[in-house]
Image: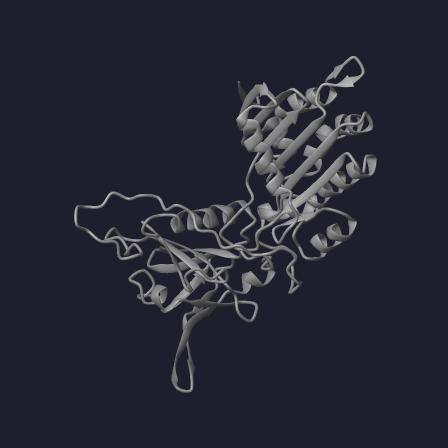
Length: 372
């Protein structure tokens, strides 16, 4: 069955299933979810239904992601409040890969009892909009609990809640570390981050999660017979108008330009770059060491206020307009920053890659992609 929201609300479906009873017995004895985000409005949508379900002996296991500031402090606190209702029945894990090229992004909901199962997989997160007002789509499959697809999903959900470098069980102590480390923000801070590049810096707090570099199948590109891949796509002969750029600021606001990017046909004509934020122009300079070339760089004061503690940010858009080179800086957790980062990640998956890396395979590398 197709669940097409907002015509049909996933939040209403989940609430109804949590409330479902055969007499006084629960219809579903186990709920297992995995989502990218949860926030206060999403948790509030289900709050009364979850509490009643847990008090009646039901079991809920949830894994949520921590990417792009989508999971808020208030959302996680509600999950902890549910744990207090039933310490045995409620289990919450958080998932985070510190490697910049991977995001925890599933939306899987599985309800089971001893004989039956109901599986929902779609685009909905446990946010207010994701459960009610967003345009979302999901597919629901009702089947036997012994069905092979149910077993596969159960195995995958169990993997996502198995403690390890990328997965931690949520409790009060971990919650404090997540807040202190900037892995989650308040609703007001998350909202501000989506509309402004300025957020509170995470600082140099110790990493809580592990890093796992992932190799994924590359998108296939049809090549002429006998042609060979050079390993990375050269710049197109079509004029490049924009560059997307994941940066690694030095000394708070210094943006170092990879030599290949600076000497490319896109950047080579420029001796300075202008900020779209305040109109100020900044020279593109050359650093030397012991009289020899070291690196190219320019100053971008805006990145001082951008949240730089996560491995994904900040990001930039470089572009030419009226014979002037401009830059626009984003926190990678804002809507604009997410688009730039997604474009860079997509380029890494092409064959050959269309996103360049300053240090291939290094999680701290700068990335850039030419947009024609």
